[in-house]
Length: 101
Image (cartoon, rainbow, N blue to C red; front, side, top):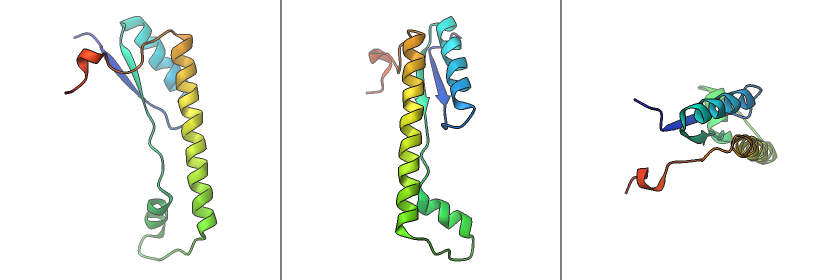
């Protein structure tokens, strides 16, 4: 079965550019479309997870900064993805006739 779509998960960390580049190369060789997946953190959920059974006091400023950092990382990851797909001249996303109704 031929590849028609590749989903690359990119966190914005040190391995993201390599993962995007590899996905681009595979997509170029197989004629597949490429899609990017980036999950942003939720600072409130992070604090709930980190605190376990204990309450952790945090300032609104800390949460705002964490949200700003998350937004910045998402933008950086999107830029890296967009630049790589342009460089490799790849279509991004599914073809219109492949989209769900």
